[in-house]
Image 1 (tube, one colour):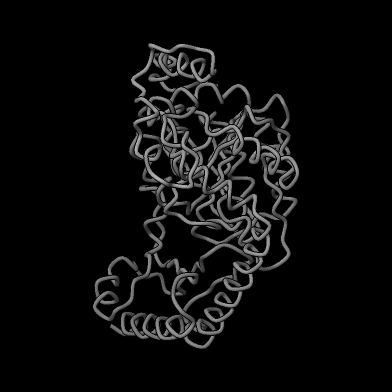
Image 2: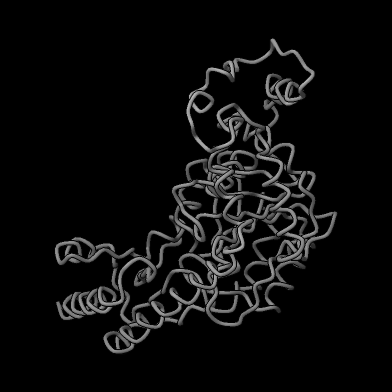
Length: 387
């Protein structure tokens, strides 16, 4: 396993190491640039928030939240891990950035699904990766092509096996097992992004690939609280195999010292509350209903000119036009008609763009707006096909 050239120059933050020791109450610290806690605004105000949240915190994240994530991973996901393997992030997007810094130099080969998450693609391309995209089906990645690509010894493989963004696919149990076996045989690290797993509407396999990894494997599991609580909190997490975590922690230290302590506190209060599970059920019921509204609207308006699978979870429909138009060219007209959609071409590596796809989100718009919007979409597509 090879890291990027920048990692050889990366050192642990001496000041952060000292500050971690200085957290002990009997230590007199002259080390860091910490303000006097008695003069911090929250200390002077009547805020009900814990006063310590106003001070700098540990780069790894709040210990209580790390322990919660580790317990959740063991009990709900089947990932054998400890709190020491958890790193709290400023949104799980930061995990993609840290992984990119860890592994990617210009022309470093990596593997993704094709299509794949747009922001991950942008990050990988920014660092200069040579991306091989592997096609997807509704039940998983193209295994023969994955095995062939793994022979080139890429730096890592980035996958979204559960309710993939944008394609909404969900790997079945057989695909999950075979992908893990292929990665283990090739000794290629796995980066598994899993932001949508709790937004589930039908019974499907959701066990993370990382849950099948062994102590000899290298892997990173990315999760977030944005989809179930509030994206504005910008709190996510990663869990990493012991060989990768120290490097990712140093990169986190260099990036932003630590994630918002207030955000971490609010997340922990929410997920520890008695109402959190009922909140998840409400989300699932609400989004399932909106998904079904969009499914009916698509069937009524677009079944003759597009194909799609009704997603078992997540936030998106992925449409494939029967006549492959470049949907990027249609966007200006749709915007004039008061409709915003994501052209599918943006989700492919630069050298593997496929025409004729659209990603539609069903979680944000009202049910009435979904019906109106799909009708506008259909009208625009029919006009383009007739021209």
